[in-house]
Every structure is written in structure tokens, then in C-alpha cells.
Image (cartoon, rainbow, N blue to C red; front, side):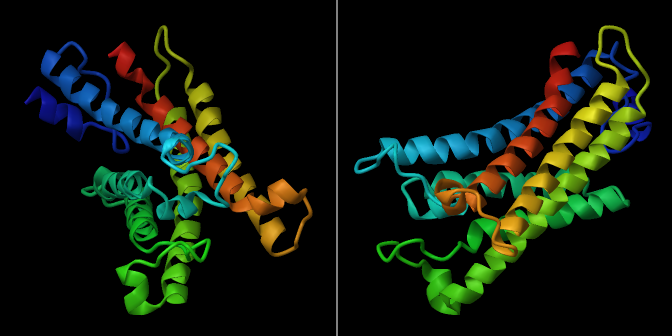
Length: 246
């Protein structure tokens, strides 16, 4: 009953932290925070594992960098790329599934969007990259447009989710030996701002043809995705960091 009361008195989606003397409630809270940490860790590992894994596989080169994270779908790290996105999508879909509020709708849409990113790949970067069955069935261009549209929606909603985190964490009661609510508010809003700045940079590059040097021009999508993923993952990792203090 204590566990149930802890959930019902929650604000937002997280259990209220006022039953920490109950060992059962503490175990439940640790499991919840661990999920947040894992999602953040998966996000941060995505650019590292796709790049390093591709370079270490036979025929790989450290000097070779794809123009986008999505381009790694056509490498030996395809399964890591798609599974990471799929896990993230399923988590977001179920994260606030039973809450009737705007944030639950946002996370639900973001979850479905990233699933579409995973299963509807971008167009093959080179002639050696073979289209998959979905692309053969519906055409490379239609599948590509689904991928791009879903990716844009997902990245924008990542900023919105981090902003929701900021509002909720900023309202928490200050606790001894913990970071202040204001710190958490600035952290999560900072992550949201980083995602929006990265998006604005890509718009400036693709729409207004902002010159940034040959390397940046060739990897502008990759850079945008890296900043967005890193910011989102940082937000989630810090949200779960309290697992060490429970």
C-alpha cells in the first residue's frame, strides 16, 4: 500500500520522493531511475558505437565518417543503430502511457517518430549500399521522406521533453546534499536550447546555404544529430543520476 500511495502522490511521471524509508519503495524508485540512466547511456553510445564499430569492422577506416547517423544503417552497425532507436522509441511510448496530459502526448508522438526513423531508412549514401525490402516495396524516395519527417519531429520533440523536465524539476522542494531545483531547471532548459540551436544550424545550412567549411558542410546533418542526441541523453542521465542517492 505504501508503494501505491507513493505513486498516486507523484507529481509529473516520477514517484514522489517522500517514502524513502520504505525499502520496497526505494527499490521501485531505483528501477525507475535506472531506466532513465539506460536511455541516456544508449543515446550517448549511439554515435560512438556506430563510428567506432564501423571503423573496427573488416574494411573499416577511422578516417571515414558518414554524413549522418542514419547513414550507419548501411554499415555493419545497422543492428546497433536500429535496436538503439527502437528501444528508445518503445520506452518513450510507455513512459507516460497512463497519464492524460500534454507531456504524455508529446512523449508518445516522439516514441512513434523514432520508431519510424529506425524502420524507414534514409536513402542509400552510395551506389554500393543496397536498399532494403521496405524501400524496394514503396520506393527509396517515399521511404526517405518518412525517415526525414520523422527525424525532424523526433528532434524537435526532444527539446520539448527536456523543457518539461526543466519545469518539473524546478518545482521540486530543495533537499539537503542535493543540487538545487534551479540547477536542474537550467540544466534541462540548456539541453532543450542546445537541441533547438542545432536544428537552427541545420536550417541555416540547408535552406540558406550558410557556408561553414567543406568538412562541416559535408557533415552538417551528423553534427546536428550528435548535438541533439548528446543534449537529450545528458538530460535523461542527469534525471536518473539520483539513483546513487536513493
